[in-house]
Each structure stands twice: as structure tokens, then as C-alpha cells.
Image (cartoon, rainbow, N blue to C red; front, side, top):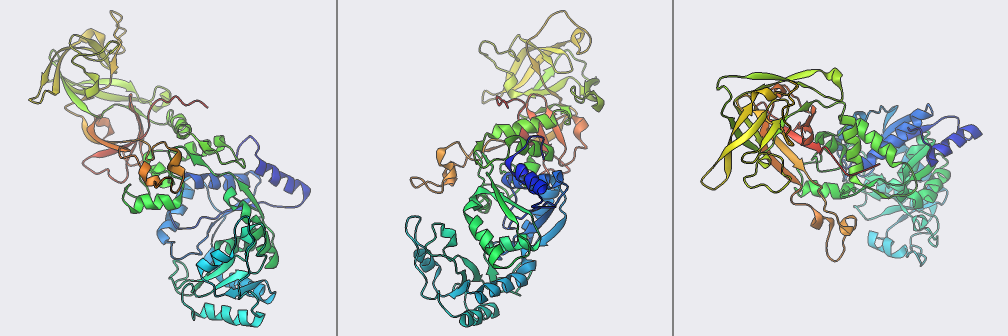
Length: 552
């Protein structure tokens, strides 16, 4: 996974050297109730990376024990995301494939006097559980006979009870200081169609019961999960032990990945999607893997970011600029350089021949000469950025203004002679002259200019749409809390997180395809959008700007 060690790697190494384990099997076990986000990428990279490092294997397993929230769409997206990140699973499993064995293990618990059917409602169970400082109290149904429990559990399976009428609970310790051991619910009634098993079942195991059984069935050696499950480890071990599982996986917890200005909750992400704050799970403003892919992030950049963020027990927040840094580092040698004008202003070069078109040479990527040379058309009329002209500029403004001269990237010096305004007073056209002696690459040394502008040839430029993104969640201490002073995270959604502008690009980009990536001079790295690009217009998502103050 990485050259530097981490505590999980140390544990695995010691297990192998001591003979406690003779192999390494990990698993990535998402619930298919939403799309994966970059927090899941950390788990993917840790599980697959460590297994690869120790010549082990990793299973992809769908923890599909809650049919009310799960869907085949999510299953398909998860498979795609894991592959896109660069990993191949050894086996593909579904928790639902083990439902019969899980049921038999629950029956075993009943026979051992370790589980009972309870009639208490969900609210009553919560009330009976107690608090962190007060012990719970036993259910009046806790001491049913083994025979009665077996009969009731079979009736639950046959569908003879309504949702919520009865549950199966593990019989552990209602006075345990660990609330997770206070007779947790391990089965509930749910008359719902399952994406994999259809209507075969109307009772479903709870995650805390199913997960350790799944790991044991698959002979997983190291069950790696985030620290939110640390308090459930005693229950995990209890289930494996009391269900007489032949294999004994070891649960190890690591800190979650949190990123500034970013929602890292699948439930909250679903809320943003369902309530229309974004245009789907793959919206580039979301930290979903599909959203980052659509934005133009690369799997290599994400892997390097996760490795640099490290593996520890802590769950600190990482600056979002750190992720952007790795995107820039990965793209700077891969992405072709080009020019695009996002907010165009027309320039007429009055002393350039009207019917002449000149083809200028430019390196595709100066940092990677092997990428070759591209040709750019240049003629009498071009577009520049609106912000590159000011009628009355401040000091140290080195772009175009009346009487000032600048260099056009890869082309000539031009000088602003006059400008034209519309009826509303907006500048709509510049009249400039050029100096034919100043052609880029000619070795001209007669004088220097301080400003260099990008541009596109007006006659041959292609129309393009540019989508510029800002953080979806505004900076706030409240953003990671459910409700503070009557506010929710939705109160911190940035209404200006997306700006859409219409501009032009070089004509040599006419064959660009979705997921092609480019560096636009001065603007940053952009990705061809796969959702909105059409035959008539290319749409670009800005991945990252060119520069950042972030330092590793």
C-alpha cells in the first residue's frame, strides 16, 4: 500500500511472523444504499492495498441486509467505482446469499439460551436499554423458554407477524457498561422485496449480527473498519464465538477520512440528491467517487492523496486543498495545454490582413515534450477574456487598456487603440494593432511587455460551456453537526457553488471526448463532461485551478 508503515500493517506483519495467521484475506463490504464517496475510497485502498502487499486477497461483499434502502443501481455503481480506482476483487459476495446460514446460527443461539424473541416496541427497547451511566432493565419476555422462542422465530420467518411486532434479541447483559451488549436486536420483521432474494424472506438480520458472520463465513483474517465500530467489537467477537464459527476474524479499526467543506455522510449526500441541491449522485460538487470522476479527478491522484493522509486511529479533518494538490500533480504531465476563453470579448486587429489565416506552433505540454506540438489558427479577429481589458485600470494592471501593449500567447504583441461600447455602456469590442516583428519564437528583443493574454481565433473557435465549481458546503463549525441552534447542514449549502459560462475553445479540440482532460492556460485543469456534452457543444468541468497556497 505504501512505503511507510502504519499500525494495521504492523499488526498483520506480526500475525504472519508469529504464526497466528498463515494468510491475509480482507474485504470491502459496502451497503448498497448509496454511491461510494472518497471516505470509502480510503477503505478500498487500505483493504486492497494491504492484501496486495502481503500477497493476500480481497473480497467485494455487499452488506445487503436492509431491503428498504438498497437498490441494484447502487450495486452497479459500487462495482464501477472499485474498478475505476484500480482494484480487482478476488470474490464477489452478497450478505443475502448467507441468509439461510445466518438464520440457522440464530436458531443455534436460541437453543443455547443466548437469544429470545421480544414483543417490546422499538421505543420500549430503547427505553429499557438504559443510558451510559445507568444500566438497562430486562424485557418481560427475556425468559421465554427455548421451545417458545424457537416456535416464535419460525413464525417470524413464515411471515405470521407484522413489521415491528416482534424482534429476535441476543441475550447478553443488560447491565453491561457497553450499551452494544445490552441484548441487541439481531433480527427484525420486514415485509419488503429484496433486490437479490426477492420475497423469499420477511425477516432480516441486523448489521451488527450479520457482519461478523459474513467475515467468518468468508474466512476473512483482518476485518478493517472505521473507529465508529470500535464499541461494537465486543459484540462482533461475541457473535463469532457464540455462533460456533470455525473461522475467527479480527476486527481492526482506523480513523475515518474527513475533508474540509465536505459532507461525508451517505445519508446527507442522499438528501442533497433527493432534494435537488445537486443534479445527481455524480454531481462534481459531491465527494462521491462518480462525482470526482466526472469532475476530472484521476484514480492515481485519489490513491496518492489517501496514502499521504495516512492510516491512524484518529479521525482528523484534511484540507480539501490537499486533494486538489494531488490532482494537479497527476495532471500536469498528462493533460494537454490549450486555450479557452470563458467570458469572451471580441478583438479586431485592424492592421492584420483580412483574409489571412496563420498557423502557429505550440507545445502540447511543455513539461512533457513527448506529447508533441499542436497548431493554432490566428487571424484578424480573436476573442480574449472580458477581464483582460479595463477602460480605466488601477496601478500594476498589465493587461489591455487604451494605449497599452501585451503579448498574445504563442502569437504577437498587440496594442489597444480604441474600444466600442453598446447602448448599456458595456465594452463589446476592442480595436488593436499588432507588430509583425514580435512573433513568438522569432527571437524578437526590441522591447518587453509585462502582460501575456490567452485568446482563441474568432473565425474557427468552437463554442463551449464551462462549469466552474466552488465548495458546496460553506465553512462553518456547524456543518458536521446534525442540528445546532435550529440549523442543519443544509443551511450551509453554498448557493453559488456552480457558475456556468459560455465561451470558446481552440478548433483542434473538436474531437475531444468525455473524460478527456486539458489544462486551459490561466484557468486550470478541465474535464470534458460526460453528462451534458453533445455533438453541438463541448461542456467542461473545472477540476482544479492552476495554483494553490497549499503546501505538503
